[in-house]
Length: 121
Length: 106
Image (cartoon, rainbow over all chains, first blue to last red; front, side, top):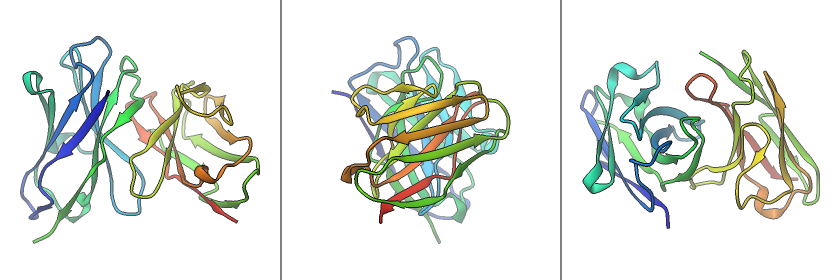
């Protein structure tokens, strides 16, 4: 069974660094063509792709957020970690991680339940 | 950046209706276009990938068409569980999602 679950803080203060962890099971990030992506959704708004970590250790980032994002993996724990620096109110959103098994075509066939992060002082 | 638009932004329909949602890209995305369904409080669910391919387990009443800049998602006979928001996604150049189309009950 394939599962993904996001974890991290519920509230983050402005200017702080947000760290989110995606813990997955049922697939391997060492399998050719597989990746884990991060997507967010502000309340009542559309989806926005943030970043992805791929089987070949390739990391891909949204151009608009690239300077603030870092994605890493912990293979032994089956985790992918997203770090976002200098957060602000516009970063309040539900953050999802999702599996991409499309050989890098970025379509996401399994998603976590999402975690709502609020940026507030 | 490739921009995506969807029309309509919302629609009201009845069970059994044929529903068509349009997605347009600001430049050609070839067939690198996917569709997702999202219900309130839930994660998105992949319906169609590469413009026309039905994801495993998705009912055959869903279909996708198009190439280049213009795409459509069609639900041949709307069912109660289909009331949701639908997003298109281009993956020709990294990833951009459309703004969504909300389908609700007439």
